[in-house]
Length: 171
Image (cartoon, rainbow, N blue to C red; front, side, top):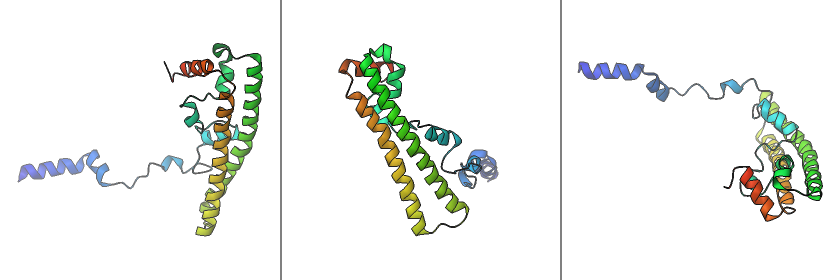
């Protein structure tokens, strides 16, 4: 009986057991100081500058090159001057549209956060706030994915293959 009591004391005192039993500490405690709780400062910066924020992964990882990366690897891929001009134009249009939509998305997330912070959220208002944010997110994702689709159409199969090789997707 003393052995069982000793094992129980050891188990109950162990940090692993205590963690298993008490899930009161949130993994989000470090995020309470964020200006927008759902977005880190890095996320906001990425969205405001028109960065990809991972939206184009379905294209990128399935063999559809991105305009930004194409421009940085234009010589290795063998882009012609005409292709560089077209990719540059696509990139600039994507960047402009992504900045505009990124600003709208951040504003929508800020508004959603404020409704909770100010304790003014209702279910009806919540639905509208979420719809606004998600519609913006959807448009932003489309901007990035469409640019991959557009630049891929002006590349040769060999250029696409070289891009994927250089990016480490295909050997």
